[in-house]
Each structure stands twice: as structure tokens, then as C-alpha cells.
Image 1 (tube, rainbow, N blue to C red):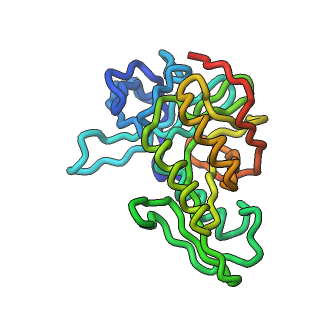
Image 2: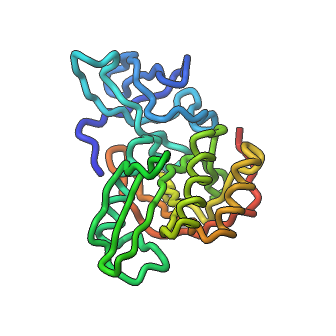
Image 3: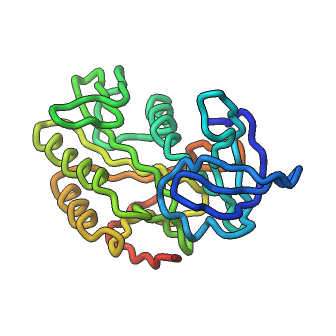
Length: 242
């Protein structure tokens, strides 16, 4: 995935979760950017942190810029919450992301698929009459090479894990896929202290056969692409950097 018009800037502040004030590195102009992630991000949104802004002016927009990536030390972290689903769908279709347990090849993939009272990110079918769902979550929180989800409590995320359990019991293949939106990660986990109920439900999901996967990404200011699978360990200790 490539952004069309990236400009580098320095972060100033974030008066609310939707916008940030930034100073363009080339001109020094102060601009308002839409933050494409509602998570807290306190560990990366530091004064003068280098950020990537995608310039997308339009009459219908309140801002001309989208803040899509932040540089943390020597590593770029993509924070665009709309990217993981598209990356996952493409990588599953081209078999870069492998779904364990399937006997057949995927012949049908639909995004934003309604199932009973639920809506999953991806629905698929194979040439062996297998059917299943993939729920995709972006992971942007990192500390000491460990990636964690979530960086803020998520009722929606908890609901999705419960829905995957129900789908698995009903006979569907069920996967929870974390797209780790940065490259340097040794293991992915659940931020248990942030949301204990999510960690408990994840344990139930794995016990019921829901498969949990994590794939990291190579990231630059204007690109992001899926790299390789990384281990997921529900019981990995994680120290919140905030």
C-alpha cells in the first residue's frame, strides 16, 4: 500500500483524539491533520516527533492532511486504522498470509461480511467447501520489541472475539489476525492490564479453536506492506510504555 502525497512534519500537540497540530518540515507551516487512529498513542506522539502526513485536500474535508505514520526512534509505525483490512485481504489472496487448517484454496473472499448479528472483516470459501471468517485488528503499540493490543479498551474488539467463538462452534473456520503496523517485533500479545476481559475472552477463543495470527509489516513514511508471521503469546508480559 502506498500513499499518494506524503509530507514530513513535526508533531506539536493533539488537542483531541481526532486531530493533531504539526509543523511541516519543509516550510515550517503549522497545519491541522486528521489522526487516522483513535488510540492513545502517548508513547509516540511526543513533541517534535517526526510524522508522515498524507496531503489530501478536498472541499468536503475539514483538514487537508491525514497523519498516517510516526517515527519512534529509528522505526516508522503506521497508525492508519483503515490500512490493516486492505493489507490482510490482499495478503490472504496472494497466500502471503497463510490460514492454518485449511485443506483447499480460497476461491471467494468478501470484506465486511454480515453473519447473523455480526459483521466480520473477511469471509472466505475454498474449493474444498470450507467457509470461514477472519477478523482483522491493527496493532500499533510497542515496547522493547513486544507488540500489544489494545492501546485503549475496546468494546468492539471484545464483541468480535465472542462472535468468532460462536462462528467456530457453528462450524466455520475462525481466525483473529493482528496486522502489526511496524517491523521490529519479536512477539505479539494482548495488553492484559489495559483490558483484562479481552485477555480472558481470548483464552476462551483459543480453547474453542479460534486461530490467532500476527504478521508484521515493513513501514516507511509513504508505504506499508506485510512482511512475515510473528509469534502470538497470550501470556507474554508487556510493560506499558505510557
